[in-house]
Amino acid sequence: MKIFFTFILTTILLYSCKQDSKPKESGEIEYVSDKPNTFIAGNITHAKNNIVVLKQGAFSDTASIDNHGNFAFGLNLKSVEYFHLQDGKNNIKIFLEPEYNLHLNYNSSKPLGSMVFSGQGSEANTYLKNKYLLMLDNGLSPASLYQMHPERYRYLIDSLFVINKLFFNEFVGKTELPDNFKQTELASLKYDRATKLIEYLYSSTYAHEVQEKQYLEFLEKLSVNTPELLSIYEYKSFLRAYITYFSNKKINAKNLASHEITLSKIQTVNLLIENQEIKDYLLFTFLKDQVKYYGYKDSEILFEVFKLNCKNEDFKLQLLAPYNAFINLSEKQQAPAFNISRSNGETLTISHFEDSYIYIDVWASWCLPCGKETPFFEKLKQKYKDKQIEFVSLSIDSKKEDWMEYLESKKLDHNQFLVLDTELFLDAYMIKTIPHFLIIDDKGNLIDNNASRPSEERTEWLDKLPNKHSVGSRLR
Image (cartoon, rainbow, N blue to C red; front, side, top):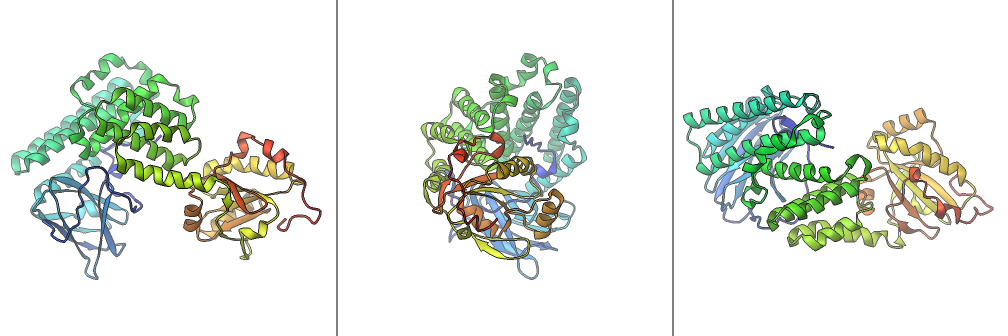
């Protein structure tokens, strides 16, 4: 389980991300217009890319970085907003108000140490930069935090909260900051502390020593039904932690599959959250995470509950459109074509497997769960070698040498192929996670785009297959 602490830099600053083209979220402003009222420009030295991306929620805009490192954005803002400026692996949190004309300079190789703001909004954004530097000075890894006993952990988290609050008050005392920004920052500190305290209860091996009723008294002063706070990253993190904690209290998460855990979270949202906007956000977030990390496997009930309870039509569009496309792809139809390569460089297509069923394992050398499935897959190859089916391993490794080195170390050579045009292949079959298994019939039709794993030993369908043709397999 991924645990996010906002005083660890990678949660907010300097992480890689994928640019997505998505519909805007409910109530979101279309920031780009022909008549911008707010501007952000800057200069980046040693830029690793030729573009810089400005993001807020589902909104994303891109600007070119010229030969001198300059870039600029024009936005049409109607309220205060936090954006993220992304330059390759650098992700910088920016505060903007309508009518701001903000400028920043920094070195892409060491952004925090070199960043300088000027113009309108420079004070608030300088505070954010200094706040993250302070977080770095006081940062500890989650692993070490969760090894602390409850009393020490609580003391540390409360101490960090006090330090950040004092830092904020000191900065406010010296610099004039917008009232909206001050209110937002105070809320972010408060809910960040709350998130850390809740996460300990389902992440630490010492959590059983906590007197929960007394420990959770801080929740009485917090709200889980204030949609105005959804613009604050720390508030959204708090909501997710809050639901996760109360969901885990009802179940034994260690004995449940991922989709069962997500279902419990969704049910907890419906039980504990009254505000529909907050409810929609959480339903969307938990289901989106399920698909992102585990794909569509066993997700039918999750989407049914989501459709019944989510009222946000944009959220529905974002999740249901690709899900429906996946369902349609899973129904019997011609399997999308793709190219593969043998280790000797020979290029083939899926048509080379005609006249046989194909059980496909999509994997990569860096994927640990994939490696755990390999012995089971190889065992099935031997058990059903006389059936009219080919067991085909498709690697999505980006480097051919990594793939070949893995094959050699594991002594694998039968029906091992490297996928060419990996992104096109993954998109065509809507594969979100690996290992992933596909079944194509002897007519070239895709009959299962989310087949069971070999380790699950659901082999009844294999037993019913006819024996191989006397001429043998074309690719053995």
